Image 1 (tube, rainbow over the protein chains, first blue to last red):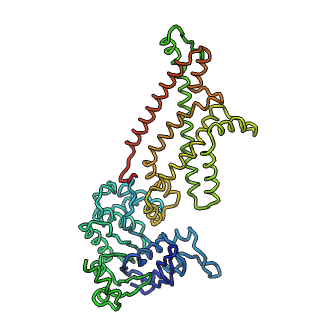
Image 2: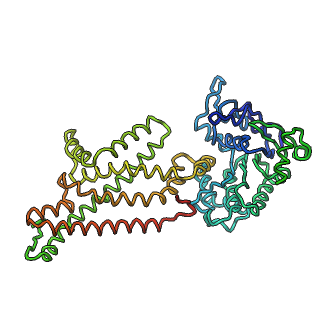
Length: 259
Length: 230
């Protein structure tokens, strides 16, 4: 793990109408770091990921990914202008996202879900993409499901396809937006196992928004507690979960751990 | 005699049997006009839908105005316009082509709304997944969104197919010899309107029933792999 931040939020503001979701957020992630984001709903956790994936723009501040501004382009005189679609396309190649609702393409087979973008966007041949897809299905334990359609799989299996699909684009940064929140309780484990394996074996930078406190504690290098559009408290998981400094963190942890 | 086929007025039944081949020639014109008009409506409607969905108002607004105009003026006016006014600008089309074009243009305004509703019913998450995978806008539309919209829009498009078929007799006013026009000519010449008009009604019923059954078959046949239809 190097010390250079691969993701940097500098006084980032995000508003939806009158509602301020991110309130001058400062936030950094180092290359290879696994960071979990926890906090009450509406605290802006998912918005951080959606801004990084360029699904939401920002109203103020600067977001930097890999040293380059994400939502801005540097002009020749060094000034920042709003990013063009070309710039966003280029920046997006560094990122991958796993969605709460999986968002698989329902009319495509599992394998086609994974190979579509590598063929169309990265220009891989169908053969290369198929091979990569099969390797990834092996990795997530679904090698025998390649020709099925998403609706023929369980939620847990669908989410594992979602992870394989994101990995097929070879991102440096993988974003997980509540990847187990839409799953039946007995299916959560299989998805967390895959994410845990990735965290252990790959030097991917991982950002995980989750309500699974035990898992966040096991898998992350650092946990950030979000509240009202800012990081209220952050630290190593053992510190934050066992002995939080802030009363607000303590309340939140008590409330979720009681359930 | 019409189209070289003579009729037999000795009895009602003999008359009906003798004019049936003549009416079938007219029916073939009706079918051709329906198919061509429907094809134009499907293609042009998709273009309208894509333009109206454009993020730039300078593109979406004119498309919205044109479709509103097409929808809110009578088909007959549009037909007369194409048939009588366009030649003044040097554009002369055969009556049949003019008729099919008028049908197709008016119905393109309706089909564009069907496309729009079908496209909007595709979950937002599908757009987001496509964007996260860096698929281009065109690829997303043609390979992610449209295939999921089509199963939703088939029943509504089928209704418009039947509507177009039932509007074809309007083309008789610009001299197209479709089925009703043929029946009227037979009536004018024999002073027997009952038999030809009844036959046209029966043939229309058969055509619309067949078309509806075809649409239902297509609807059942189309794969809807896990696509939630509302």
